[in-house]
Length: 312
Image (cartoon, rainbow, N blue to C red):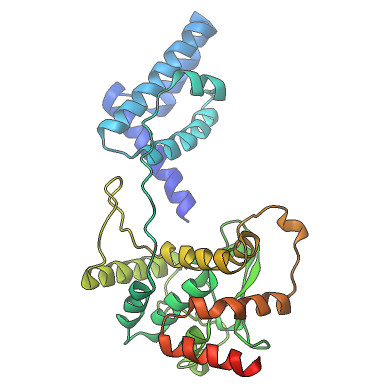
């Protein structure tokens, strides 16, 4: 859904540019470019084409579009122009077009105290509390978590194992991960009331877009109430986002074990990952070693450490 919306937004952006600057349409302007190439030859055509594309880039800058946004729109625009019969060359783009430079700010690291406050802020909504604890203790993307249903949970091991369907992941690759004891305790407060096809981490009954928007609005509202609303100067985005939960897990998993384990649990493509095939029991063992670092509340951490000492 997001991909389709981004493509449509980029095409609409190009249509607006062509209308505003050339009083034309994409079909007409591309037809004129193709006709110009036939009459004037390749050299003049290429000069005209890349001057035109540079004009589009500069126009987007005047509209205060960010450097990353312009690059993303241009990638989509290239495919759209190809569809309309106008081809571009990667080497010509590199040599002839000037894009604004991306401003890269240091990413803000989510603190355990901030995560705890965000969970507590939704005390009246245990599903949302479970959602935050799930994302921060499993490395799931928010979109992945919002697709999880009761039937996707497996209770056969020491912690709840979550099976993430390939069609709901960014890389179209299915995987299993685990959620912490804290998250499990929240889930069990309402688990018995759910049917197999009910969503575990959201009360919203709408489509995925509706569920996602509902959660993002609730998250932004909590940030404002808690005073955690600081934003990056380069793009105006909150420094703490739902993706901060995933980064929180990845950072701790990397420090406790290694990057390959963190990549495997979060669904990234690490080095030679196709050869690193851990079974569920092995992943569970490593997860239990990591869990004390992931938990948010001190009481839970103490309980886990006492249990570990007793076992030793």
